[in-house]
Length: 477
Image (cartoon, rainbow, N blue to C red; front, side, top):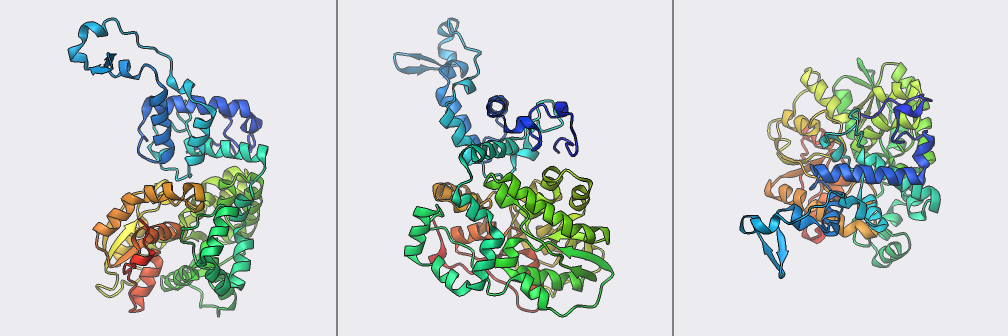
């Protein structure tokens, strides 16, 4: 997908300065030039016009600033009236259409708005015809991230970004005081204070903290008899601190499929720090995970992650964050949890649940799974298990920490409207998504709780099927 940059010293292979170690990466003038270049290419293509707010704002602003837009569209202004081309052939003979690209008319604040509205869903990357190795080498989300990193380097990393990026520190504290932390998250005064001071939207539903982390559960769990297929679980911060039930379900289902499950020492994958512009913080976390996961990989274990964003980071970002053979070795062993379990199921290593145990499912496919191009494995797993599954193939607009921020909260809910409508039109018994934060967003929009496919599968085996009744008081319009 991206340029093979690991270990390179000759930066001629990276003329657009997109590699983290390329000195041009931090050159403000160069990134301004790249923004102009890429915006011109995007404006000429517009294939991504409806993907996210960044493109919508970019194209609308370019059109608004273009003084020759009416002429270019075959229209002419006369006396305040628009005359169509077929009615004004003679007039159009005298029209001069400028060849100047209107992208050059964008103001600095216009460009900044496009950058800040990019929430790194990365859906434009597989859709774009000009991604590397094309000579245009357009990597829109990486360029937006680069611009944010340069700003963070110049202005310093804001407290909110440091707070949201400190998932292990915050999660470790909050799980120790979970009842108090969860009560505070529902207190109107506290939420208003968070909105005004940190910038976490007052009305954003926040994930609850568990009273026992997944890591604590794993440490006290009695060892299970070894299976024939060795795997290692990268639990993710969300599973560890917010929803350990996903991790417990993963362990039980994997063992039912004949796997020998290990859970090596691990820290946050680093994506929240990347989103906040903290490159060195993300790199340090990546180095630590490479060091602790590498022995498991060399012991023949696949690294399974239930979180699409974490899977994406481990697979595609680690070889760039840590340009070593060891990082590439770890990245090559990473798999999506649902993908692996489905493979085990299709290999007849996993029994099917009782008929009807899964039920009617609205399955939302996470953006960060879509961009990895391995198919809709969560949906397929639930179908294999007997579920009547409707696919919800729309971005929910949550995208990690972006949808939690005060200034983007309303825009986030607006993006989620299409996905929420499709969930409701499916009239599901249960809602599912591989991404727990996407599930949180769908709950905010529909009032229905969402569950990871592995939890739905585990519950189906236990004769306690999960369901998603709507609670209107939790619904946001």
